[in-house]
Length: 438
Image (cartoon, rainbow, N blue to C red; front, side, top):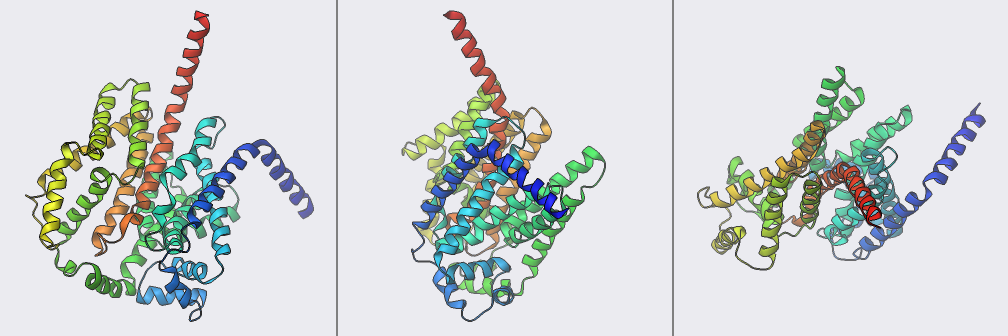
């Protein structure tokens, strides 16, 4: 019986590879390119040197507990960082390659499980390497940044894909992967909000609770509790306040949130360091044209125009915001905050975010899908805003935007999926018109 099951399994695997080998090969090639791009930075200065020295002092699981008590709530993520930093880098390279491939395929299975959407399936890995350039993972050293941000992202997607499988072993692996992902507090917030929405939506639709979603939601809740009550967090907070932001603990909660809000949107709109938002806005424009939502086209085109002329140094909506930022930088008093002084950027940022959110919602034919896209965006934004509560808000650089980039990446794929049938129909109509003229 066991031999028969193995034979059936192998036949299914061989048949699957035969039917999908082109797509699998393309995903693997992109995974190789992505890995090679990242390992260019592997010898740059970073925290991996510190983690490598810890390997001789601690065991794998012992280090997770030690760091939980003295520094971080990330548990096994800390252990994996130590392990990857202290052993030959080939282990890291192979792990990165394999997990990237599994991530791309798992994401395809989640967003595009059915047949069709061929061009979107091939576009998925291309959009991925454009959105996540190698330099994004260098701020704390390549290995620590990848293990603390990229690996949890990979684990979340792979785990979610496995969660939808029928066999119990896959579900067990799913919860292991999801548990690892939710040891990273930003991805915990992201997952908590998205899974919470899916749990409610599933209940409203089917009038019953999806137990797998409930289990995943419970894991995310445990992740939040673990991060909040970690004994090492207080020690880390006091050290980082002294190093990065003296007096940070004197700021009120609302001031911290507003400062984080201004800094997050400054990076998104004013400095425009993250090219993903240009990609998102361009896709919105194309889809709004296909759907003949011309108000949306004009509104988003205006935002793109403003971003472009700001990059060119021409006066625009953001010029006054940059003036405010420059004035505050000259003042060099990070404890000072005036809502009146920052009222203009607060209004502009909020208006832009609301316009983008509303436009995205109305681009979806099924409003539940539009609501899901909005929830994913809000969850990604909330995960970045979590950094507002940390004194490293101005020192952590772009790596803390990775959960937000991931959320935008998912929304881009959802928009491509939504627009693909319309684009195919448009192309067929143009071909038919061309043939009728000749």
